[in-house]
Amino acid sequence: MCGIIGYIGNREAKPILLRGLESVLYRGYDSAGLSIRDEKNKTTHYYRSPGKLENLKKKLDPLSIGGTVGIAHTRWATHGIPSEENAHPHRDCHGKIHVVHNGVIENHAELKKQLIAEGHRFFGQTDTEIIPHLLEEEKKQNPTMNTRECLRRILSKMEGAFAIVVMDADGPDSLFLARKESPLLFSYNNEQNEFLISSDPGTFYLYPDIAQKVVAMPPETLVALGGGKIEITDFESKPQSPISVPMNETEEFAQKQGFPHFMAKEIFEQPKALRDTLSGRMISDIAGVKLGGLEQQKESILSKEKIFLIGCGTSFHASLVGKFLFEEFADMEAHAEIASLFRYRKLPLHPKRDLALFISQSGETADTLGCVTELKNKNILCLGLINRVGSTIARECGVGIYQRIGPEIGVASTKAFTAQIANLALLTLFFGQSKNMSLSDRTLFINTLNSLPDIIEKTINILDPQIKKLAEDYSKFTNFLFLGRKYNYPTAMEGALKLKEISYIHAEAYESGEMKHGPLAMITDQFPTFFLCPNDSVYAKNISNMQEIKARSGPVVAIATVGDTQVDTIADQVLYLPPIYEPLSPILYSIPLQLFAYYMAVLKGYNPDLPRNLAKSVTVQ
Ligand code: AGP
Image: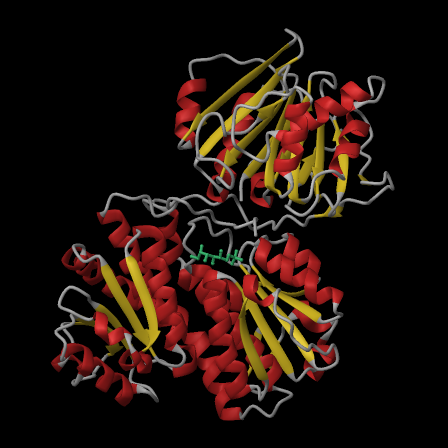
């Protein structure tokens, strides 16, 4: 999940590399570093810092660093603690070869042992550090071979996932890129004398003048940039074509727009995100929906009887909502699957009958991508529900729906979740039109989706101060339970995940009927419960579960429907939401939980955008 930046051109590399790192910071931020080649003075500047990017900037600010070629990296530790020794770039014995890497070299231990036996010295504990030494050894064995060819030869020795950028003093004004699984993109200007490299499409919005052409490296390829013609080849030197990456014109690089954190901005921009994701896609309750990305495979898609919805984390929670929607309204057998589990299951899959829908905001999640590869190899039709345009999963699926909600930078997913559910509702309508979904249901779906942005706009402004106060009242508790039934069980899971991942408070979610089968034993007056209890088909059951909690003195915060006069006789606090059509209620009911988690994190002095140990896009398995 690390972030990689590279630059070759005629400008000072330092500011471009540092600003580039900011654009990939959400992919990992426990240490950072950069190397800049100053060919004029025949020297390579090399700086690394543990902790936040600010620490590296503080080190570099007073320095005037020449040089117009460089690489930079922000790390999410996989091997070795966050420290200066483990920060990238890593170097060979002579400090001539510098490497940044994203991914995991699975056989690094045996390669390291061999290199130590050949006299190489290591200073860190990372898997990455073997790469410059492997390249150094290859060059030593083949003194007349150029860096690119030596790099090609070591790639087959490394098992696992990687995207690497190499800077070699012997290959000045060039950078060498190689990719196996982890994403790696580059752009250049029309004159092809300035290149920008990144592990993330968002970086290229920072420098449109160097992003006149943006391409992604195909899997298992390498290229030398800066030394003239761009020639991408595979690891056997066969020429390969770059994958053109459409830059979403409307996607300016995300700014906080006056909010204290990206997460706050993204919570409050959910009405806009829903309008954007729905625009032009709902024709009418009769004519149904228009999903352009599915048109080319519409017939094949609609012929399928079974659908596997696959994702991780929040995207898995959205999958669960989708499962309920497809079962109830599209007359389809639907399975919601956790990607890291699903790819190792031995399931009888049938290309004629089965369909896979991959849900991923980043489109780079390695566990999800692993499933795509697995199912494509089994000839299963794979659709993507993705936010990042041009991302790897979007490309691998080739067919699907882009969320079109703009970049989601906060590590905790918010607008992506609600937009995912809105798109799953559109997909239900898409399937429903050929599976006899009733006109009344179709009308309810479309009217609800049309009304949701305004409802959320009003509700969020009413609830915001109430939830900020609630966070203050509940900030002393160290355990929380989130309960919901049917459509709001995934909502409860999402609420628990939000609280865990940004405030680090322990939180669990349960289908509320499950409480009496064990978890109720945990309830005391020190163990509060958030109870999602809309006035819906399971309301009565929820009320009795709520009473069971109260009977054990458990504090209850209920999220209920405006006008409900019973719930406030049971719960300690009630947050009221407008009435909402049950199958789409997770879109509305997740928002108070997002806000609660956000305020709890801020109260505890944490940065909700960059929670510890996490990254926005988990590109390691
Ligand atoms: C959600 O808040 C987390 N950031 C995480 O669970 C995330 O949803 C998960 O890693 C999947 O990411 P994706 O949607 O980009 O594939």
